[in-house]
Amino acid sequence: MTVTVKFFASLREKVGMGSVQLSANAPLTVAQAWSQACNELPLPSHVLMAVNMEYVEPSTVLHDGDEVAFFPPVTGG
Image (cartoon, rainbow, N blue to C red):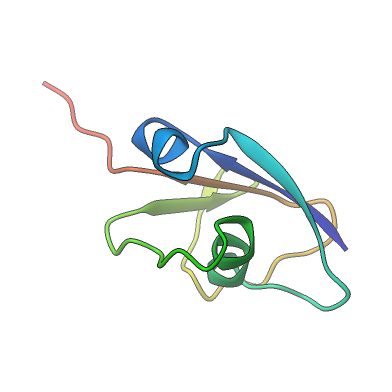
C-alpha cells in the first residue's frame, strides 16, 4: 500500500518537508501515517486532517493511493 502525505503552512516548516510517499504492508490510520512520516513526532491536537480532500478523524483507515493532508486551523478576517 502506498499513500501520499502532504503538510501545509506552518506544519510544513515544523516537519521540514512538503510531502512524502509512505509504503506499508498493512493498512494505516491517518494518525499512524503522521507518526511514520514525522519520525514519531506527536500529532498536535489542533491539526486538521483530510483524506482525498475530505475532513477526517485520526482513526480513519487509509487505502492504497490515498492522499492525506495535514494543516493547521484556518483563520480569516
